[in-house]
Image (cartoon, rainbow, N blue to C red; front, top):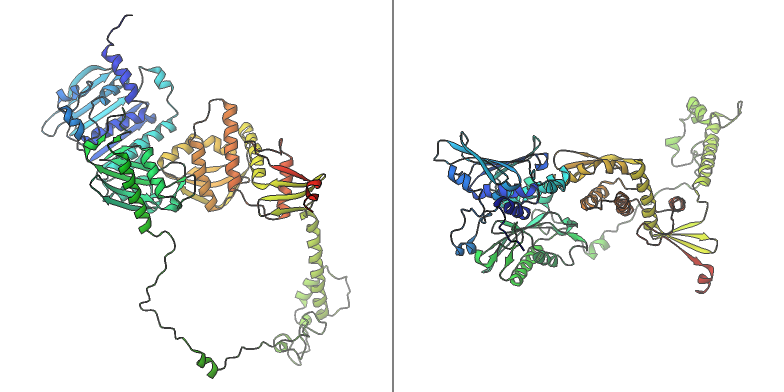
Length: 636
C-alpha cells in the first residue's frame, strides 16, 4: 500500500465538494463575508444562474494587498485566534474554507481597497493557484467575481440543474441572508434584470414585506419571550395562512439561519387543533442564546447546529407561540363600544295594552283576470282606475296600441282573424304562454338523462344496472377522466383551456416564479394559461377543462401546483409523464365544479364509460361498485 499526501489543489477540490455544492453556495458564502465585513450595501450580480458569473460587491472594510492574497489560503480567517474563540462565535464565517474552496473550482478575481489606502488591488486566482496581483482604482470594500464555476470539474458542472432551478436556490440563499439583517441594503440582478432592490428597512416586518410580499407580511403576528436561557422574537402565521408543503419557514439563532426539524415540531404542536392536517403555517423565529450554549460547527455549510439543551428550548418556543396565538383573536370580533349610540326605548306590556296596534289588510279582487276578453281589469276592480281606458274615449287597450298588439300576435293567429285588437292581445298572450310551454317540452327531452340516476350528498351517483344498483364515486370518476385527458395532452400536446371570465392574479414570490418558468411548456400543454406579471406575481387567464375558474379555487390550485412542480421526478419520461398526469388529475378532481343534478351525473357517467379503465383510478382506487339485487333483498 502506497500512502502519499494529496497535493494542495486536489485537497482543496475535495473540500470544495462539501462547501460549494452549486452556484447558490457561492452566493451564500460571499454574501455572509460581505455582512461580516461591516457592509451596509451588498450587490449580487448573476449571469446564467451562476454558471457564467457570480459577482458580489460590498462597501465593507476591505483588505490590504497582502490580506487579499492570504484570504484564499485554507483556514485563513480573521475571526479566530485561540480555541476558546470557538465558543463565542457571533459571525457567519470563521473557518476560512469558503474562498479557498471557491478558488479551487472557479476563476476568481478580487478587487478591494481599505478606507485608509489610496489605491486598491486586484488579485486573480484559478485552480487554487495565485495568478497575479496588481494595483487597481476601486472603491472601498470588496468586489468578488467568480467565473466559470466547476470549469475544472466537468462532472460537477454536468450535474447542475436547469437555470431556473439553480436560480431558485440562489434566491433562497439571498432571502435567508437578507432576512437576518434588515438594516442592510441588498440588490440582486440576474442577466441584467433587477430581481430585488432592498433598501435598509425600518423593521423586520418591513423587510419581510419587501422580500416575500405584502400577503405574507399581513398574515403573521409577532411573538416575543425573554428567559434566562433564550430570547425569542419574530413572527408566526395566522392559522388561516397555513398552506400545504413547506414554504416561508425560517429559524435564526444569533443572526444565523439554521434548520431544525425538532424545533419545527414545537411550532406545529402549538398549532394543534387550530389548523388541519397536512398544512404548515409560515414563521420567522429569531433566537438569541449564549454563544457557548450552541455549537455551529457540526456541518460544513453551518445550516445545522446543536443546542446544549434542546428540550428546554422546545418548551420555551412552544409556550411562546401558544401564548401569542391565544392573545390574538382570529375570529370575528364583537364590538361592545356603545359610546355615542342613540338609546332605543324599551316599551313594557302596558304600553301595547293602551295603544292597540292592528296590521293593515290588503284589498283583493278574487274575480280579477288580466286576460279576460272584457279587458285587463273589470270596471268593479279596485285596479280599474289604473288599467281601464278613460270613460268616453271609445278605445280599448288593443285599439289604443294597435301596432304592439299586432306585433305580439303576429304568427300566433291566421290572417283575417276577426278578433278585436283587445281580445287578440289577450288570446295572443295566452297562446304565447302555451308556446313557451312547448319550448320547455322541446328541450326537456334532451336534458332528461337516458337512465334514471340520483346524486347522493354530492359524493355518489346511484343508477340502475342490469344486475342491481350501480354506485359511482364522483370524486374518483373525475380523477380518472382528468388523468386520461392529461395523458393525452402531454403525449400529443393537445389541450382544452377554459378561459376565466376575470383573470386571477396570484402573488407566488420570486423563488416560485422560477418553477413556473421552468415548466411553462408543460403547463401550457395541459391547458393552463398562466403568464408572469412582474417578478413575483402570475396571472391565471385560463385553466384546463374540468377545473374551476373561480378566484378562490384558482388561488388554492396555484398553491397545489407549486407542490407538484417542486417535486423531483424520475428521469424516465414515461414514468414522469404518468406521475405528473396523476398528480394533476387529483388536483383537478379536488378543485372541479360539483355534480348537483341528474343531468350532470349522467354526463359524468358517459365520460367515465369512455375511459380505457372505468373501474379504478390511476392510483388503484375503486370508482364503481355494483350492489346486486340479492344483496338489497337481504335488507328487507
